[in-house]
Image (cartoon, rainbow, N blue to C red):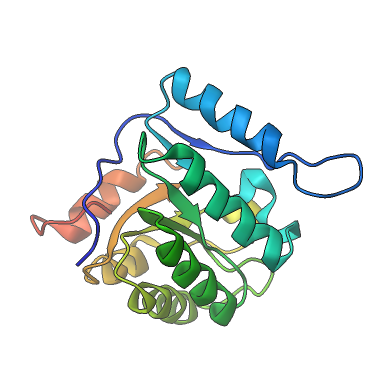
Length: 189
């Protein structure tokens, strides 16, 4: 069963701090997490695109997510970035996030590949099937070069683990389009 955490308010997409030698600066990350929580953030998003997740190695990605879960200590929920242009890699990131105690997943549309709407649907469904964590679909065509259309989002909303979206399309009619497509069905998308 999926964890039931409250994801309301401002969730901070964390940057990933590095030392001069190119390694992840865990002490700086810890200070940043504590500062974010002290300042009133409602949740943390490690290894998202703000943290330049596509440039992190797999080990760095895993380290950042695990360290964020550990340092947050349950004070706020953690929505782990688990996006990749490779479905196999996104599934691995999702499973790792669950294993280290993350509360939810933020999965960006596969970047660079330009999948079709059916390809997007299948990608997100496979990631959603990989764990019982709630999954938030990140629609950011300016970065991924592909837009998840409202009809595809409505199809994805049928999956019990796909519970919401982070929409960065700048299309203010998008929530109305989704509401019209979803009708009264219980969904957060």
